[in-house]
Structures are given as C-alpha cells and as structure tokens.
Length: 115
Length: 114
Image 1 (tube, chains in turn brown, orange):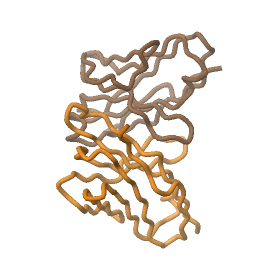
Image 2 (cartoon, rainbow over the protein chains, first blue to last red):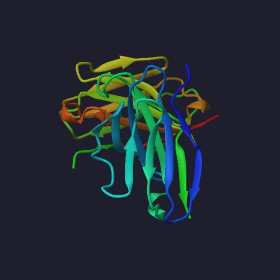
Image 3 (cartoon, chains in turn cyan, brown):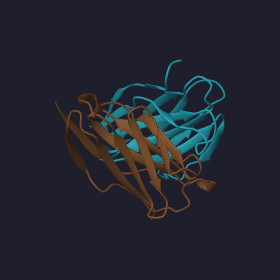
Image 4 (spheres, each protein chain N blue to C red):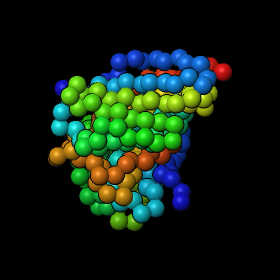
C-alpha cells in the first residue's frame, strides 16, 4: 500500500510566479491536510479538505493561497504570485476519517524555493 | 494563544541508553496526542499516539505517557539506536470544532552517539 505521495519534491519559482503542489493520499483515505514547515520550526496547519469540500482553512493566508481536493485526482495547493517568504517545506497528510479519530500520515513534502 | 511546546530542544544520548523527550501542552480540551519522528529531508513519521482517556501506551521500544493534571506528554525510547537520531515532534488535536487540525510543538533534536 503506497504511502502519501507528493510532487514535485523540489520546486523553484521566481517571485511573482505560481506554485502548484500536488498530493495523492493513501489508498482508502478521503481526508487531506496541508501543513507548512519553516526551517527549524514545527509544522503549521494550513487547511483540511475532504473530497470536493474545504472543512477547515483557518491556517491559510487570506490572499494568494488556495487548496482543492477534487472528486478525481490529487489535492492541489496553489500559491499565486509567490514571494520569498513562501519558501518552506509543504507537507500533505491523509487519514481515512476525520482527524481526531485517526492518525494523519504524512508525505515526503515539497520543498519550495522562491528566488 | 494555546500551543504545544517542548522543554528541551536538544538531547544527546549514548547508544543503548534510554531516551525521554518531554512536551507540554496548554489546551486542556485536547483529546488526542501523537508523537512524530522527522529525519532530515523527510516527512514526519508516525511513532505512537494516545487518547485522553489513557495515561500510558506502549509500542515497540517506545512508550508515551500522558499526565493530564499537569498537561504533560513524554516519549520514552528504550535502548536508543543511532537510527533513532532525528527531530521528534509532539502534536495535539484539540477536537471539537477544530478536529483535523494538529498543533505541533517546536521539536526536540535527538542525537544518538555510537
């Protein structure tokens, strides 16, 4: 059973470009979570999604960031007009049911570098 | 705001020793706690979890203790090995309307010397 998959593993963008990060949850998991990790810090919650629904986006910046989890295909975290402060590791996690009833399993992350 | 934090940012032990990593949490409503291990360049790896109706849970070489009175969580690793070297994070799920949202501590760097 494959784990959570994320791609690309590394992404380099120039300021003002768009970044698209993809996450495929573990087989049988219908709940997806995105977290951001700055160097030498813990992970910070961004958004929690189920298929076609955003459940909790309380950790998402109000502008430039969006997330979706369509009926078919991976979850996408989209960052428009990237700035240097967006440079971080972005992790996706998945669980079969809602978060406080099941463990969240993490992917390997996408490391975004904004030049 | 409410948060999860760690007492010790670094811990160095000799191979074969037992390791104890501590974590304090401030949200008394949290009902689910998890320890993750993160190696350099990788995503967090689940180690062990515990729910608030328990005070101890054991896994393979690991034990998690939960003291709700003082809001303290610890991870004990028996017979620590070099492969245990990593950053260890505690995380809490506050439940209620915030279910699904894990709050992570800053992390403790564990270094195991051969």
